[in-house]
Length: 104
Length: 235
Image (tube, rainbow over all chains, first blue to last red; front, side, top):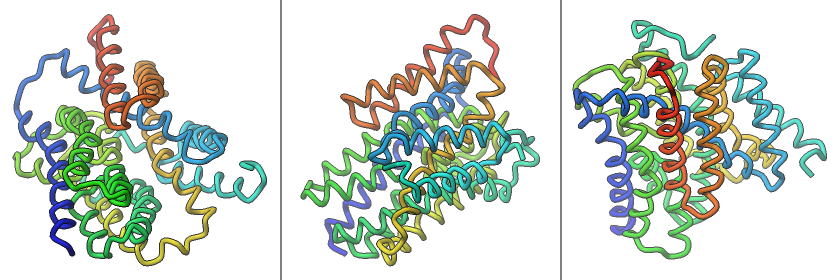
């Protein structure tokens, strides 16, 4: 391994870790205001919305691919499927449809 | 099985491993692709696996490969990694509100594994989430990410393209599966996700992905918090 590549990987590791550690270590035992607490508790659901859209629509040249995936995953979830069932089920549907001319 | 309704006593390390399987599975195609692209970019297998082992961040690792292939310098790649990961400041502070109080060193340990997906699985648990559970989700996801980087380096090009393509949807399916149960229970969750989704779609037109996600998430979380008339949380 070249020294430059080694230093690059170490640098990337530090740049990543310093974004993940402070919130958990330095906020430990700190009392936050109810307002801030409310905002922080909202973050997971807001983040999920932003992580799904618009990214899921653009993973295939044909936007239908993402739309079918999203609809399948929501339907399987609403029917009570566990995490793994939703993941495998929507992949199975997309794979089957890929063998047809559906996604062009 | 309803993944999000277990009491702290039931949130063992092995439950974390079990519920982390969906993340591990979702990482399979991403890590295999990363390993394969790392090979075509000219990294050695040691470099590819070491990057997954020490950095453990999907988007930034892919970005690093594309920047390396156009000859970008190390400092710029490191800075872009930081920008792409800035959202984790917010996510770790958010998880901290739900996480079991514990020794800072233990929390510093699992902080390393706080990817979007590990955050999504752990932070959507109802009530307090235990340290053991978080370690379970983190370690099985991490193992999958590192090992499948190696697998991808070795065999990536040989997977049938149809399956590779469908599996790129795995992580989105995981996010939807995490969102849907709460969506049914709390109307507020729908607004939080929908506002963030719309904002991120707008911002991503003219902003880098990392900034766009953090700004959309933060604005949605604040707006919904301030619009809520009573201070009742869907705990």
